[in-house]
Image (cartoon, rainbow, N blue to C red; front, top):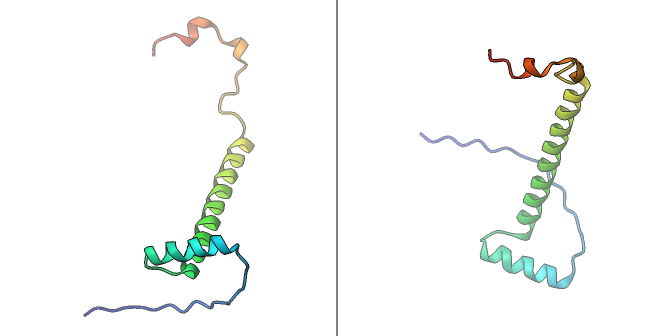
Length: 88
């Protein structure tokens, strides 16, 4: 038995203006890909916002690493050359 769960997501209609040539190209693209301009716009917005979220998360991780300080705290001038090349 196959079960399917449908989720209701509230949507709102918006109106925006596009240059006529861009709209024509979008209609052709949508038809060639068996989709709608509405779906294209929704997907582009979702991808853009998800990418932005990933960028922010990566920046937060990088800043958290920077806040913890360097991993190597010894004064480089205090290390002898022999110690650097000593086999362990």
